[in-house]
Amino acid sequence: MNVEVLVYALLVIFVVLSIVVLGRLALDNYLKWLEANRRANELLHSVLTSEQYRQLTRNGYLDIPSPRDSGCVYRVPRAQGLVGVIEQGRRKMSLCLQSLEWVPDADMVVMHKLMIEADEETYLQTANKIPRISAGDCDD
Image (cartoon, rainbow, N blue to C red; front, top):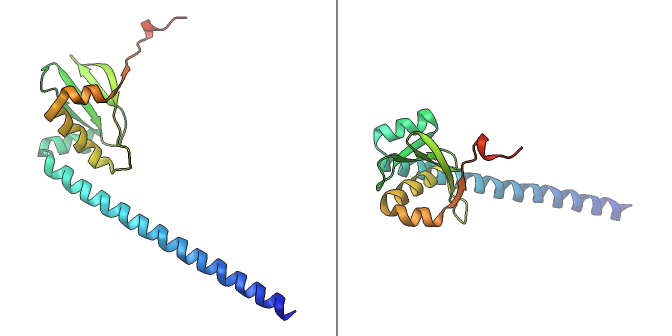
């Protein structure tokens, strides 16, 4: 009987310690995530003009004009997702470009902006292109 009580007590201690350790790991990861997002938002705020920052927060996207084509705009979403290529006011295609590891959404916006403005050609070569499908393009 005493052995059973001892085994039960050890099992309870093990479970409690496991919960404490896992809780601590989760808290540490959450705190790192918060800090990464804080730094990313600071960087975003410093890279964008006031008008660009307002557009991003108000509309949920940032329009970045093409450095080489005055009729083309890249529509970068606030949250990670597809970048729209807008030509003459119409979506021509979407682009998919992701990091290999997790980064905050604000860092992705900065990454798209800097890559487009610094080397648009490499940006386009690197991104996966998703053509726009219109209703007339589908067969019944």
